[in-house]
Length: 207
Image (cartoon, rainbow, N blue to C red):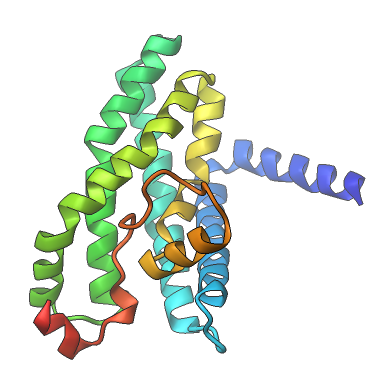
């Protein structure tokens, strides 16, 4: 069994080298889909919401995976020929000040408009209310991750970022449930992502 796993992993790494964009896009979609399925089960749903799951997989395949791929290509151009922990630290800071705010905002808009079908005026109101705290929490959560990145080489940084889409899946209730079952999951996750799917259109108008 372990030999099969190692062989599968080697084939995956080979595909990552030969076809990086395609492999990262598929990986991101599969990870987001799997994470959402787990999050739904943890939240207690009896029947999986396949529409939500497929739309989130589409987000990972069409946006999250390709975005990360081209972001790090751009980073390599900006920091061409520069290596070491100082360079990795600069990359992390640049990423946190640019792509992190945009990705969180874009995901909130996608989740509200596409996954839940909420009118734009209500999504915009939710963004104004929750986005600052969501982003602040994301930065706090990424602080320890960033420390780990600075201690890694660039290959380790790219590898870590390949799996970052998983962090977008759990909503507030799912995370609170996890915290009640498992201690010390993360420092401050309660507002990592907006709890869109628990709110119907009438409730949105009251927020």
